[in-house]
Length: 472
Image 1 (cartoon, one colour):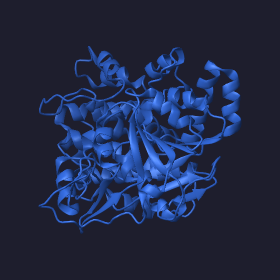
Image 2 (cartoon, one colour; image 1 turned 30 degrees about the vertical axis):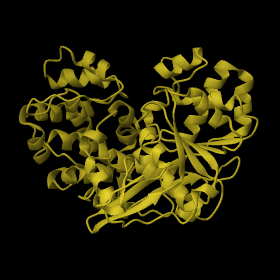
Image 3 (cartoon, helix red, strand yellow; image 1 turned 135 degrees about the vertical axis):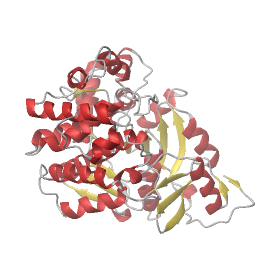
């Protein structure tokens, strides 16, 4: 880090010497969320002891490595709420590899016996899942490439290439928003390995653990303001700084093959079954985020805080949350009504500029578990129709003022093809896009089409204000 003479240092420093701790974790998908979540838990655990520093891996962009490596992996974490900001220097990351620049180094890091845990945050689209069967999608570009090449480009290919060289057990810990993410990761890895070498698949099944986990911390993208505030608070010019909210949660299935950091001492909760917590977060937090993102963006709200402070949109969010909560099993230690209230308070934190457009990306990957799964279990399925109609309106790629935007969805090209010739007709738009998701019954379809018709005729803001109109 380069010291800025004008800055005032107001930063919490690590309570350990990073040079005294070697690496034990490889993290694939290093980005803002990892730096605000798993790396922070690990930083706290390192102050207790152990060789658990992190080798980060970026599967695509070299930007994170370019920012972190000259700083010896250190960066500022800014925690924001409306009462003020705090800053903490995180030192748990040792260095960052860029997969496409040095794939051999990534494979070697996974294979290294010193690596005992691989953690993952690559978002839902990075796994190569066949959504219909929850198994390996052999047509996924990265999966198809890696099955025929010795130089992988995707998550599953790198994991299997590293495991093929190992002789010692390993834990692979998914931290992405997938239901039963550990089980899914295990299935994909073993299936891929069996395509390459059946004996390797058997070895992985016997020696590698895949615990599930649930992670939660609202983390917006880093901006110039983030970097400027980091310099002012710390005394350093830090190109890797990240900002986040005060709340943080990590629930982990306690199933590790070769030890783990003292994450429990850092606030993580170890349980026998993560599924109730995963489902709660996906259906309440993530599902509501999707509603606020699509409807909020189309209504002109730049951030989630702006969207949820709209009384009419908040009412829609509360209805969906109540319906989603009714589909959940009991969650140990959680009062669901209190959890809903806490979520709405977190969403309202205006100190966190969490962009609606950022959350709106990758809708075809997110909506199945966030919206369609609770809808299928709900006694009030129409509570989820506004989100679906808002997503379909968003898929048209132009806002109510006619301004164009990119969908940033892995099926963006397919969506454009499906919508060709629909001519702004809500029924045609619905029917063109409905095949991307599970089929719905006639009352649900009719409600979605009515809402979408209203959005197209009156605009999103007016539809949010009066979503029950029947004459749209």
